[in-house]
Amino acid sequence: MLLRADNISKTFFRKTGSANYFYAVSPLSLEIHPETVTVLMGRSGSGKTTLLNMLSGILQPTEGSVWLGDTDLYRLKDAALSRLRNERIGVVPQARSAVDTLTVMENILLPERLYGRKAPAEKARRWMEMFEIGQLENAFPKELSGGELRRMAIIRALVQEPEVLFADEPTGDLDDENTERVLSALASYAHEEKKGVMIVTHENDAVKYADRIFKMEGGELF
Image (cartoon, rainbow, N blue to C red; front, side):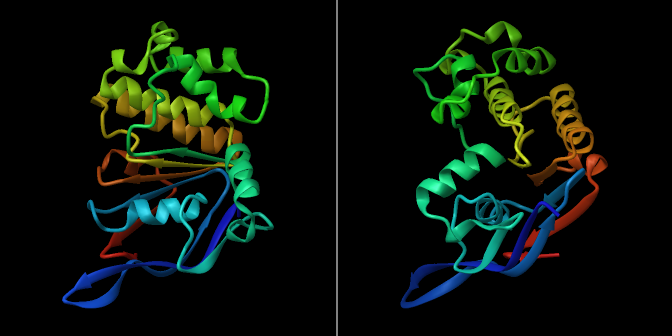
């Protein structure tokens, strides 16, 4: 086991005439294993992204705990949690995450440079060639299509070589060919590098690459 969530949930305040709270994610427990692709299916608004953000150290649960190995993520101070996430957890966000003033290569290597690590430019170039954006190394985000931006974000996460990688709708902007290319690369990363990968999606393409499949509906995990 790489990562474990124990009885986590997330509630938000919502004023509907009389003040109350609602569960975006109902209490649940989940484990992410090495050499395993975990696919989380569900419609938009089902709680998938909220769960991913709690598992990846971005959003503190209302209750429960998240462990990466022997480390309780949310008992760390902010600076220590940020560093741990940078070094051990990879995230491909659903939303656009490029820094417009940086080139494609600079965007990809940014997480490595934040803490003074040696930038793995050659490794980045290999991934860029594999994902067919090698010619865009010196381009800026405004020059890229949505699919190219998505592949750039995936490469940025893979270059970090995280112990566990979370990908939120990683194929949402991709055509069929690039969808297969990306999902195959994520599965290979899990199985060959002995890492944990969790793919959050509402599409069925990822199912054939999954070792484990879960579904979310109304904030509940099935």
